[in-house]
Length: 460
Ligand code: GDP
Image 1 (cartoon, rainbow, N blue to C red):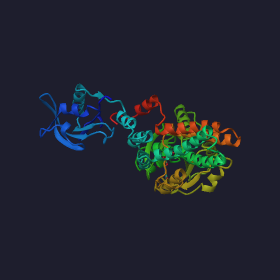
Image 2 (image 1 turned 90 degrees about the vertical axis):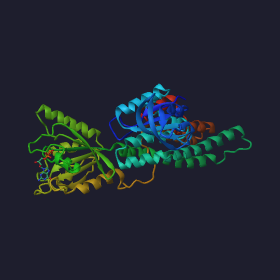
Image 3 (image 1 turned 180 degrees about the horizontal axis):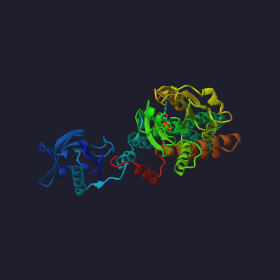
Image 4 (image 1 turned 135 degrees about the vertical axis):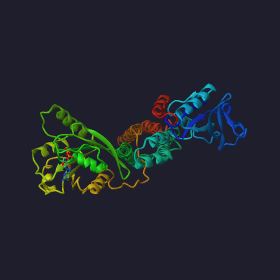
């Protein structure tokens, strides 16, 4: 395989910048441009050693660097790897990189180092994908989940399910080949029972995708309510900053604003939406349309009501819009005399499929803020916010393969119920086995591998 090189750190002025070289000629090529201060050569050095010296272009010194040597197979890619710690200037990094290319390296493609780690068998596909998730994780929970997948938790789980399935396939094949010595008496009952357990496990993984997605991407949260109810103020209370514009004129929040916010390891993606009321003003109408579309894509709706005013018909209109959504009603301005109670607002939800939580808040005094955060955690993780060691699926590719595996196993159970011949069972068992293999990368096409790694960042 070619020897590849990439600038692995961001191209902006910084303390150090790292260039990574991997492949058969990584050490000889590095030796051509690296002069160790004590006159040594990387090709003579022991693995996992650090060397101080200079990158040179002929007579000219380009940078003062540290070179790290990791010989195959104990490296990220399992190939010979040299990592060069340069000074972090853009020009410096580009010059060193160009020198490596001039001396025989090829610029790496995005994700190619991790792809090599996968193709060389050091990590499975779920771990490779977790590398990217880890780099892009926005919250503490997402980070923990990526690390657990990276360490092979998902791989072990899928592998053990596959082994069980393979055992069944082997047993069926053996019995078909040698019916005199292998009997399948009672096998179907046993298989049915085992499949129930496996299906429950696969279905749990499929369900975990929703939590995994929320961990990874955050909870899309729409803040809705009548003009002047205090939506911008509530947003500011959550953000603890004066970001959204708060004014006393009705309908000033004409555009939508988006912010991400971390609460106890969870990310809320907040969408501050325009007040909902019938309006003749075109600009506002667009704002209202946006509020509606924000509600559609929201995982959570925060409905802000002004509790110093009475409920009216507009409350019913808003409640109709948020039907079916996970919602929390904030009875805001609780510092003012109360004209609206939880019970009164709740009465408007009669007939709605939404069963919201009600909280008295005051954006002015901060009342209700903690209660709000607690309720969000409760809603999305049933209070179980401390990350337990369960493996979670955090990508759509894996979830889709799990769905295929689940469907195939259900077909096996249907065939057993219909007393179909055994070779029938083994066809569906095989397709479940293959789908699970795709998850960990054991039965995966080159095209798919290329697609997955092309979404990686450069130098990883
Ligand atoms: P929006 O139109 O729903 O975004 O409402 P704003 O956040 O712009 O607030 C409208 C007005 O209500 C402003 O004058 C705020 O200062 C005031 N306000 C918002 N929340 C509270 C609250 O909890 N208590 C009191 N007393 N006033 C509030």
